[in-house]
Amino acid sequence: MTTGRATPAEDACTNALPMAALSGPVGHAVSRVARLHRTAAGKALREVDLYPGQELLMMHLWDRGAVRQTELIRALDLDPSTVTKMLQRLEQTGHVRRRPDPADRRAVLVEATDESCALHTAVRDA
Image (cartoon, rainbow, N blue to C red; front, side, top):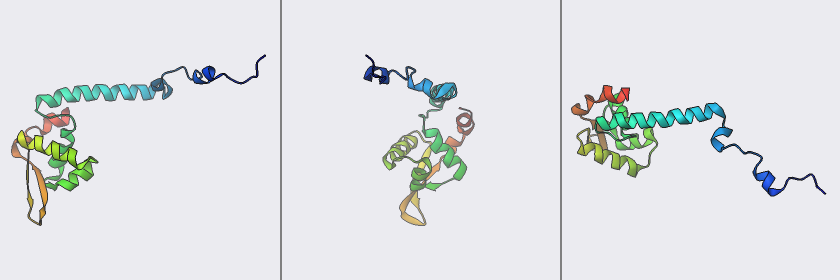
């Protein structure tokens, strides 16, 4: 005798499709394109001595000029420790320099170096 109610196993199997497919073919395609872009962009960035994510910071500096470190944190929506680590690496490779803000010596200004400006086209096209 059946009660008309689904068993727990039947409930669990009503959506037999993987979660990626549940969002539809468009969602799956967007996810795949994003992954392929990350891979290709990562390869292009390595050629100019940058890690993925650093290009966003550099583009912000190239667009805005010298900015406070706090503005970078806010604009990139990253944890302050992440931005500090990114800036340390970029400083070591000669892409940025940090200096005290003349308007407020407690604040730090970050600016792209002249050498890094040569990377602008390669990063934009990555």
